[in-house]
Structure formats: structure tokens, C-alpha cells
Length: 85
Length: 85
Length: 152
Length: 152
Image (cartoon, rainbow over all chains, first blue to last red; front, side, top):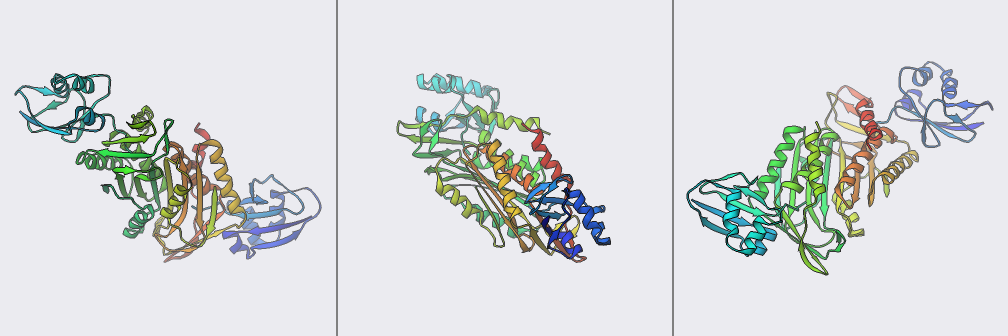
């Protein structure tokens, strides 16, 4: 399946990615599995996505938790806890 | 003793007084005694000050209750519950 | 800490900018504006006249601000209350509060309105198709005020 | 019910007048303005940059308004949130709420700010004499938000 990924704030800076299109194996995918998949790209990916920092995720613009299922065509975003207002 | 009296809103309209200077017998005076004194002036005074309507009083610009003592030179005001804001 | 009783209208944006000009450590500004409604307790209101007790009014509004300052951390507070004759949708009152953090500004703005409604010597007279009448005080306003005696 | 994400500044007085023009049954308008403070967690702040997630931002702010409308009686609500680079004392966010009576307007304005602080995808980066850093989320904001789940 194909998904679109976005990174924001501290994650975007550290990963040096703001967005990417990703093709994933056609099997059941969750936010946590996706994090683990991306963490294999290297140290900084592991630190940012599976480390001590709190990471929030959104699927198609809705905040979700680690167990949320990801489907073909989804827009998935990773970012730190929000600090607006 | 001499006091200055003010009436506001519904009371002012009904009593047809907005302010007056009043000379009172030199004895201990309270808000309640003053109301009873003024009520003797006639029907409308009794109705407005000792009737069913809630009447608030202030001495020298401070809200007070019926037992508050009135002294020579005081400014005393009678008015309905406030409705600003 | 400013109190103004006036017939003229006010501009909330202007007053907010006055607060902002004075210092750079403000994190939150909360405003309350009370307006003339065209319907009150079922009566169509064409006009509202506000009477007050000059001298006591300013003193009671200043006392409300003092109580708020003793209880919460705020930077600045302003109350503007209009008197005279107003039309539906006209602005009646402004309570403006600035603080470092939003919790204090929200609490103080609401506290000041609840106290103003029950302590400041203003009286409203409404003009309706059935004639003019004085607005009755609402027990809900006493209840709103009493909450602040219970809260920490 | 309007949501705007913009780099431009806003004028609270202007927005209040837009609310007032539309109808005559508004009794209360409460506004919250968040400002850039020159000091945050002990650091001198010379500049603040706000990043957001276009698309999700507007959706989450609209969802906050929907939740408020389902729970309280309000007439109109507006959220303006600025993005880009701001200086101390600059306005960051406006939440404006109108209602017939003040209790609802106060509650909704504070509710919307508490939700915005914890749900809307904005991130702040501060410039200080020690360099730039991302602002950390505050647990106090989570606590403020949780209050609304407990209150009736």
C-alpha cells in the first residue's frame, strides 16, 4: 500500500524530511508498526520515533494513538506534542 | 445631626426626590430607623422604603445593611438591587 | 488599574493595544463585553437607559479590581461602563484583564463581572412597546457571585 | 463559526463589531488573546516562530468549535491563529465567543483555549540569546484540558 507521510517541528528538523510518499508491504499496518519500520532507517530515526521524546500521530488529520490502523492512501503525520495558542 | 440623602432608579422616580439634606434628632440612628422615619412622610414613602420591594442602602459610598449606624455628616443612599453590566 | 464611567462608546482593540504597549511580559488578555439585547425576559427592547451613582460607582469598581488583585496574579485590569441611553447591540460594559498566564485572566474577568453585576450601583431601564420599566435584578447573578466565596 | 490561520495580525475590536452587526440578541462577548512574552521558562525571548500542519489545523479548530456548540448555548465563535515569525507583545491567537448570557461565553472561550493548547497542531520555536529551541508542551495544559471532562 501507498501512504503519504508528514513530519513537523522538531521531527522535521532532525529527520530532514517534511513529507514523503512511502510504499509499504501489503500487510496490516498500525502507527506503532510504522514507527518501528521507519526507525530502522538509522539512529536519528530511531531516536526521534521510538526514543524518549513524546511523538504524536495523526491519520488523515485526526489525532490517533499507537494502535490506530493505517490503510492504503492514508495521510500519516508525526509530530511532537502541540504548543500553539 | 445633618445627613445628605440620595435616591436612585425606581425609588427616585416614585419619591420624586433625587437628593435632599436632612436634619435628624440627635440620637442613635441606623439605616432601618432612617427608613422608618422617612416612611412616615406618606404612603409612597412607606411603600418604597418599608414595603415589599428590596431596598439597598449605602453609607458614604459603601453598601451596608439595615443595622448600619449613621453619623453626622454621612451621605446615605437608597436604591433598588443593582442591574448594571 | 483603571475605571471609567462614560457615555461614549469604547473600542476593545484599542484598549488591548494600550495594555500591549506598556509591557512585553503579558501572555494573556481576556475581555468581556456586555451588550444591549433586543429581547429581555420576553420583552422587545427598543432602548436602554443606564443610571448610576456618581462617586460610589467608581469606588465600587475600584474595590472589585482590588479584590481580584489580592486573589489572583494579574498584570493590568480595566473596567469601562457606559451610562445614558443605548440601543440594541450597543456595548454597555468592558472588563479587560491581562496576566502572564490565561487561567488568572479568565478567572479575574469572570469574577469582576459577577461582582460588578451585584455590587456596582448601576440601574437599567428598558423601553418596550408596553412602555418603560426598570430591569429587575436576577437571582442568577447572586448565585454567580456566591460561587466565588466557595471556590479556593 | 469561523476559523482563520494567517500570518497577518488581527483587531479584536473589528471582530467584535462583525459579531455585533450580524444580530441584536447578543448579550455577552468574551475574547481571549494570547501574546508573545519576552520571557518564557526563564529564557529571554527575542522572537517566536509558529509552524502548523495545514489542513489538519483548520479541521481541529473547527472540531473544537463543534464540541463547544454541542455543550453550551453560544451564538457565534471565531478562532484566529497566526503562524510565521512574531515578536514579543505580538498577538498570537484570538478566541472570540458570543452568547445571550455571560456564563456560556466565558465557559466556551476558556474551553476552546484549553483544547486548542492540547489538540491543534501548532508548534512554537523560540529565539533566545542561547540560540533557537522548540517550546516544550506543558503538563499544566493537559491538566487544564482534563478539567472539562470532569465538569458537568
